[in-house]
Image (cartoon, rainbow, N blue to C red; front, side, top):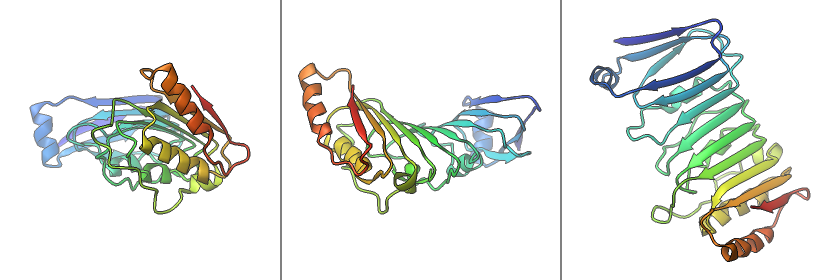
Length: 231
């Protein structure tokens, strides 16, 4: 078994990156790669790992504030069980692909969720996993025209939309039906929403932006305090 131990009483930021070496690939394939973390002062974790890893936390992560995970990597070495270990975080950064599997982790303390997605048809379970969410930022990279399957409303309204979500920002708006359907769903169910910022794709012309702006202003909002800003 390959065992890596990180132990420090003062370490506050940890970025874990593992290249694809042959020995590590063999260890990961046979579930023989283990990471032990003993960092009681840890505040921030950035996880860029492409191998399946068993993680053992040697202490309480009470100081943990922010975690960053990439779930878009080919090979999908980062498991949802791994993510759940860091559920004390208050800020969660995730990079997702349309093919990312069912998200079953629960982050009861997360108030800020920053998503980077390659398609608007991402798993809405991610948002449902943050019942205390106050701020949601979604940034779409690339063009999803060839891989969209159509927006589907969640089976149940995420708790954060009913109780806590006040701010939403969406970057990369292309005026696709999926995008409009998702934003419509959010503002139609977010009871305490205060502000929605929509950032148009920079390659859209001025005329296209103006037409999109008019359409989005017509969205029905359940929260009387909700304002929509188009950039």
